[in-house]
Image (tube, rainbow, N blue to C red):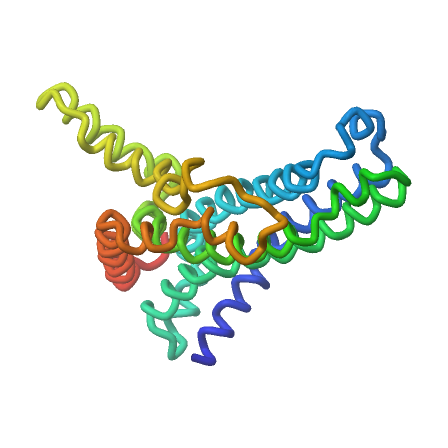
Length: 282
């Protein structure tokens, strides 16, 4: 287990964007809070209890979106870059298996990068809420700082990290296969085979099953992991129950699509490991 810690540290040393990107977003939001014009904020109904929730939600959504985009790019590049700069030869000379290498990169993409973004979003939300409350000198500070909503965000973040890792495992596995296999342009090759397969199916068979499966996996996460409006709204004043009502824990983990996708993703990761064993430098 100790070598996994060092492998993950290696990724942080070599890929500073893992923490530079969240730090840059945080700095930008803090600068806006410090020097941005307050007129837009003053137009908001300050007595509204939803101001803080909207603020926390938008901050979290920004970090989550950028985190997912960077995680995808990281997975496409991580094994490819090792072969391109021939550092793969050095790592293969060490008593570290290709399985350990691939799994460590998977852990970084699915857990380490989201956790870094989680910490950055937390710190940013606290600092920005404090700055705005001092600058506005009004109820807007209290509106932005919703203690109950902030605590619920912690649970939601952890839930998102775990469930997204399970749901998007097939996507991660496919990216690792492409990264371990292609000789150039991994981003292009991650899309091209799927596009060609879709066109063949569409024109020669007349169906679009592949597009439905891929599309459902990419954009079906929210529907699988969270409840709709019929189960009630997210109320920050009821910390004990409302956050759990928003999360569809039982529905997600009893959904066959969750575990079928996880099984396919695990098979893809195993395939990426085998390809890594057989392909060296470019």
